[in-house]
Figure 1 (cartoon, helix red, strand yellow):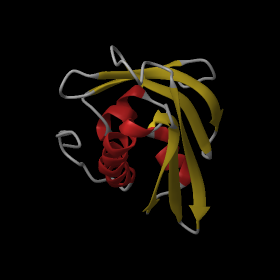
Figure 2 (figure 1 turned 90 degrees about the vertical axis):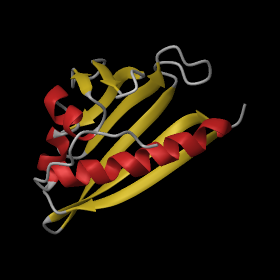
Figure 3 (figure 1 turned 30 degrees about the horizontal axis):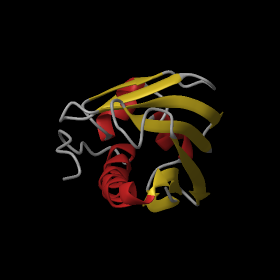
Length: 144
């Protein structure tokens, strides 16, 4: 099975500290991805997100650098090739004047999972941009 990497970037008209809050709290996370989240933002802390279709992604935080970097493992409950904790998502928050460049990489995915996860992150990062800029993105319809 070949592993590959996804990289998605977006600019946010908000400070890194603002974006960071949406990555490190259950309430914040649920505003931009899924219909619910359980976030324990500390190294080794559990992370879980429930999609509107009932799928649940889970993992553990492996690194948190205030207002700069969030790293966590990722996988789907009951999934045969991407089980919980089997891949890694790294989100870098790079200051750009009064804005922030969000750089997300997702590594360790099997090659056949790249298209679905790429579509997912390309759906969700714009939603993160909206909430960090103070805009309600509405109920998450999912990436498909």
